[in-house]
Amino acid sequence: MDDKMGDAEFDFTPFLEAVKMRLNDDIPNNTIITTVKPTRTNCLAEESYITWTDGRVVQNMVLRLRNVECGEIEIKLRWIDVPGPRRK
Image (cartoon, rainbow, N blue to C red; front, side):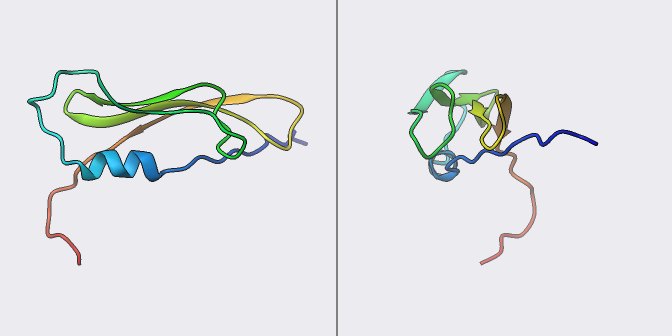
């Protein structure tokens, strides 16, 4: 039987706020848009930077797993605009 991996959560709001800024390629590559600090509620193991990288909003983070003896997971979020009609 497999061991339980644990769970983690994070706040998606800072990433979404960065996307809503509608940045463009006038901004230098790898510019830090905002920094998200670890708190008791977000499971971040270290500071996470939301950056403008290769024309996209990107966030790398390391999350500390809960409800398990120990463990961390690395996650990368990258916003991709999908062409097509916008829904209202």
